[in-house]
Length: 304
Image (cartoon, rainbow, N blue to C red; front, side):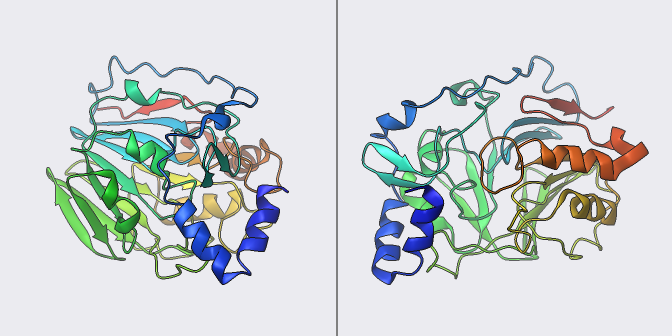
């Protein structure tokens, strides 16, 4: 039984969905069989020696996990460092496996200030990863997701509904509407899902997270870095934008630089693993130089 067959069966049984909810809250300590698989490919290792030398820096660690530094604040988006994602069944995880390893080992991350959790899907809210991260880091997440994080020991968790904002060390975080869905195990449809606009006095970064094509970002302008997911659109176009649609949305916010994520790490849909980036580059045409990171482990810094 594949993980897709399993999830299709689960969503038609209320009892199974409640069991799945409990299994989805595991911490991953015993999942030794997750490591009995083909070893993920090793990506280039980013050089963080000059990480703090510019006012805006970004590293693609893998999937939707991005290490950001904006005017002195270090942010990690949707951290997923596990070999597999999904439901925990004791010594193994039922879910897709990782094809390329994280570009930075979890214990080699620089000190973090903020972790952003865009929504509760297993490829964005990975409890085994969160369990291993420092607990003094502040969590900023979508509404009605904190119950999946709170027992892991973090000192402060801030939930934001769409259009709500908070300021941390002079950096403004605003939750933005997207077209997606938030349920983790099919029956918890109350959970939120969002993009996050991150603004300092000098820079504006949009972490778009997961979204189908929409025009909710049109009131945002002059984004220095737009981070968009470009994969998992076949056949899930109702929840994930195609590369061409991502290019259009990046232009809605007048993005100077575009960082494509949510591709090449896990097989979540039917399109070939290398297709999303190829299609994005084709859509960009003679403006392809705006696409600044094209492989796991890639890094980018602003000019100042």
